[in-house]
Amino acid sequence: MHVVFDSSALRLGRALSGINAQYLAAYSEHETTQFHVPEVVVLETETLIREHVAAEYKKVVKSLDEFRRLGVALPFGDMDQDKLAEAAVTELHRTLNGLQIGRLSLPETGGHQKVLERLQTGRRPFRGTPGQRDVGYRDYLVWETILGLAHSGDSKVAFVTANIKDFAEEDPVGWRLHSELVAESRDKGLDVDLYTSIERFLSDVVKPSLPAAARVGALLSMPQQEQRLRQWIADHMGEEGYGHVIEDVMEWKGGRIEDVTVVGGYEVDDLSIEDVSELDSATVVADVRAQMDLLVDYYVFKADAFLLEYEDFRGLSDWNEHYYWGETDMYASVELEVTLSVAEDKVEPQSLSISAVTIHEP
Image: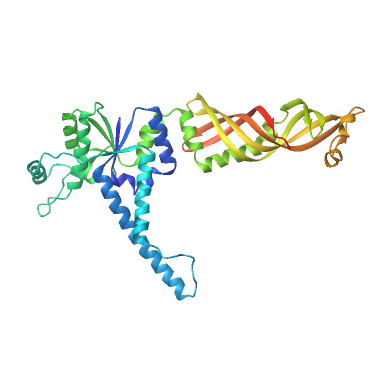
């Protein structure tokens, strides 16, 4: 399938950021999909970005002047409006490239005669009044670019545009591609569906087609979601990881301790998702590796206890005639299986089990 983005849907490129970008990337990996943006859309979006930067620049300069009148010097050097605009345009192209969104070159329109005939008859996407018939020329170029995909070997096209005035007509459940454009695209052998926003395309096409594991992977790539998972693991390690025996016998600080067992955990310093497997359409099991401090208890043979450092020895409790009991913190790499449910745009941890623990040397 081809997915074509219009400037009205890009929202200066911001619609391609955050979780939207992660979903699109996951969709591209799991489906045979090509993302496109027509050259005319790129040029228009660049212009809109420069205009937006200019407007925001004026606001900032005005605010700085007001602060100076109040005798407050803010730590801003000389700001170059053109450099700021070019930086914003560069970010747009970085975003497009990062999602492998290709640029479709300007179409061959068939000459001025063809364009003028369409303009004068007011055929979509032209919609000008008798006194201003050329309204819609830019949209015409976008549409001709889409029709140019007829020779690609893939007839399915998703057209993402918020411009319902020129490209759409209302139906009982919302908006669809205008019937004039439907007929024209079908004559070319194309099946074009219209989506009024990137979010609508994601909800109608992308999310339903993604396996739960892919959706979870996309969500956990977002810092906020990952941080929630880190905190949940730390909070639930004592409850659900309790009793996991790390080692029957361990060399530790010059002595031997036995039955080293997880009691609880603290903040996760680092977390990585090694693999995700699907249980059902809304539940997955993630293989997670976490670097964290664990609270463990252990037993130490009384003869070995005197080999420990004083601070460790003084915290021991007399257990029986042969052993002391102790509790301490150990920094570890913990391999976990975490069951997660995915609903809407949130991942909710349900349970965890410890697969393995590797204690780092103190």
